[in-house]
Length: 485
Ligand code: BES
Ligand code: ZN
Ligand code: ZN
Image 1 (cartoon, rainbow, N blue to C red):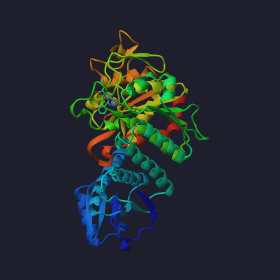
Image 2 (cartoon, protein in one colour):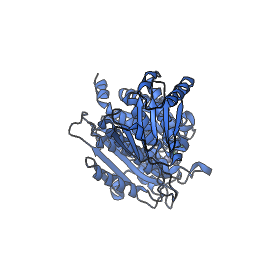
Image 3 (cartoon, rainbow, N blue to C red):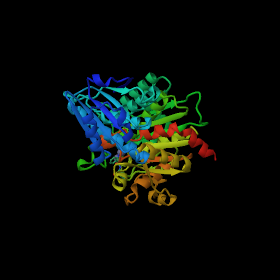
Image 4 (cartoon, rainbow, N blue to C red):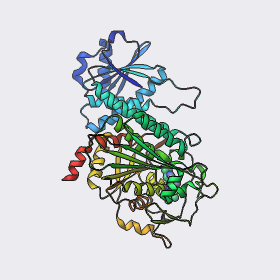
């Protein structure tokens, strides 16, 4: 989707117009006829959040009223959702171009609306013969927003689109080697991102026992991708390390997933897609932060020589792990990636992983299960930022006592707590063992992929988390100051 700033000529509209209408005094300058205005006013009195549609054949004017007195964060999320609703109506109109303007609104509100619209206007339709007509161009009234604001946000939103493309792409096309190739090509295209791809041999020589074990049942090789964005003006002394779970497909392995639990498991690399997308968005917008991403990539299959329960692995950092369930594979590849990232002496490690079904059961599908070790301040900042962009965190307890549940008789740890209590926390505790720097764990199993349409997040891959982490880096300077206090 493109956004252009223009002075809209309201008496020569040749496409539908979306009008965001924030407060009463604005009515003076509305480009409406008297009877239209009276209608809008009447509807607005009935419901300050109403959508009013004026039919000016062959076009329409969508007047989205909203209560500008509402608490800010809530109001912005309502606007994103309202935008998704209007986008759906416009798809029915079969048009590719619209106008957007507003009265009584601030730039933040216009951005939230356009953000919701852009996200709702995404489809994964490359395999469909009959594609829906989506909006290709939005002409925004020029006084509403600064070009630089549109430019920065469009770059972020397009990264969310690509993130969703990667997650939606099935494994038959997007396996680990292919994804690594795509990331390398993307880094080259962006220009200021360095990409190093470690191949199977290198992973073997490094002794990444977790990644290698999970990969054993697959016909495709594993990859370990390292991305680095280090601008000259970076404000952090040491990199922030982003680690993303890159299970290209999770069959469960020999502990194969039953019934309908396997479908949607192409999304098990959403953590890797989220982290790569955030790093690319930061690089494209030249944020002054040194960021690295560590992405272990493989699928988890029950093929010949697949790893099995009772196996004992030696991980990259030397820890031994007894396998109790091959479906708890994410933590094995992440453990190696976290230990590897840890060697870069990062000032903060954040991972994102579709790690546990328990997170979905405990918290539902609108919040990230979040845990931290020695990272209280950046964690609370991430929480605040999450409230602001409405991609929220649910902090879970992370006491060492939970480690009791991961004890093994024959190795240093088991990979899966067989009592199935506190599954999300024990998975996080398993990972925390491999981090010796401030560490934040984000279990995104509940939010990464939606089986049915969810407002601006759409259906399928949601891109949930990219806006959160991008906003975190936008405010990272403040985070650093808080750290130093
Ligand atoms: N990829 C799954 C977790 C998952 C489940 C993500 C549902 C999104 C939706 C993970 O690898 C997994 O299979 N976890 C097991 C862990 C269990 C064996 C301890 C689970 O949650 O059932
Ligand atoms: Zn699994
Ligand atoms: Zn998994």
